[in-house]
Each structure stands twice: as C-alpha cells, then as structure tokens.
Image 1 (cartoon, helix red, strand yellow):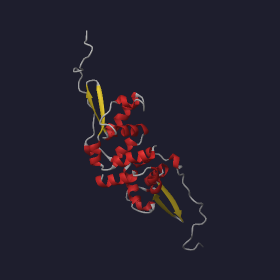
Image 2 (spheres, chains in turn yellow, brown; image 1 turned 30 degrees about the horizontal axis):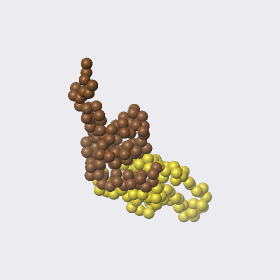
Image 3 (cartoon, chains in turn purple, red; image 1 turned 90 degrees about the horizontal axis):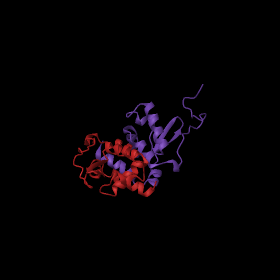
Image 4 (tube, one colour; image 1 turned 45 degrees about the vertical axis):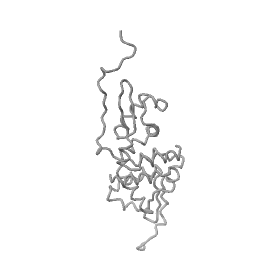
Length: 116
Length: 116
C-alpha cells in the first residue's frame, strides 16, 4: 500500500522544447502576443515570479491553455519547471529584456493605459 | 493629341477601407507587426512624414507590398492619400500613441537596440 503522500521520484523529468536564443525573433514574439488569452497570460506572469497553469483556468480551458503555453514557450516567452506533480511557469523577462530592451515594458504599459 | 503633362482630374478618388477606432485592437496591431517586411515598413514610415509605395520596393515586390500595406491599413497602422497619380502613405502615429501609449516607441526602440 502506498503512503498517503509520495514524492513522485519515479516520473521521468518532463521536458519541453525551448528555442535557442538565435531562434527567438521579435516577429515570433509579436505573433505569440497577438492573441487576447496569451497577452492576458503574459500580463499576469509579469506580475508574479511564477504561476501554476491552474491559475489561468479563469481565462481559458485546460486544453486551450496547453496550446497557448506551447505557443508562448516556442516563441521564447515562457519557461516551465516541474516540482513533483506541480508545474510552474514563468516569463523569461531577463532574456526578452536583454534581447529586445523595452519591448515588454512598452507593451505592458500600453495595455495598462488602454485597458483593452 | 494629349498634352505632355496632364493632371489626372478624370480619375475618381481612390479610397480604402479603414477600421473604426473601436475596431483597432492591440492584438491586430501585434499580428500586423509580426512580419519582417511589415515591421521594416513601419520602421521606415516612423522616420518620415509620409512615403511613396515606390520607396519600399527594396524590401519586397510590388504585389507583396500591396498585401502588406493592406494588412497594416486594416490593423489601423497606416493611412494613404492620393495626389494625382502619386500615392502617399503614413504611419498613424498620433492615433496609435493615443490608443496604446508607448507601444510603438517601445517596439521601435527594442528593434533598434536588437538590430534583428
């Protein structure tokens, strides 16, 4: 019989494909952000160190969120890590700010001002 | 026999469809800008009061430019006017800056810094 709490050590580390820095383009980033749900995800991630996919279920279904996270991840905007059964997602703010200085700040500020 | 120079007064005014202000969204703008040629057009327009389509033939074919101008126009980013046979295009900087303050500045600055 299994103990009530288990540490999921048997699970193989789940890993995603991430773009190399040279494959991250401003066009890919803008395309990824040109969707209301994904822009909402990025706005919310920008206000937190990291979040669980669960935190976004108000905005979209689990299936749609999985797709949106994939698009954001492949554009170079987010990363994920696993801790046991929990998944944590964060915005790659340092990378994007380094590659495209002022892009995220300008964008997030513009959205905040306009409240679309 | 026609005189060598004619003023094209017989031509009906050519007009395009432009979105209403409430139909211009940040998502549409980001989608329109998520293309290398269109971003190049916008960068160049940002440095001039207005330009002729001819000025962009280094970046793309006439046919492709027509498509790109249409996408930018329908996103609310550019306007065009005709003067005789000449067409002039300009960036709707005032409108975009008013609707999404800092968006274009942040974007153009980020591109300049990153030189993609």
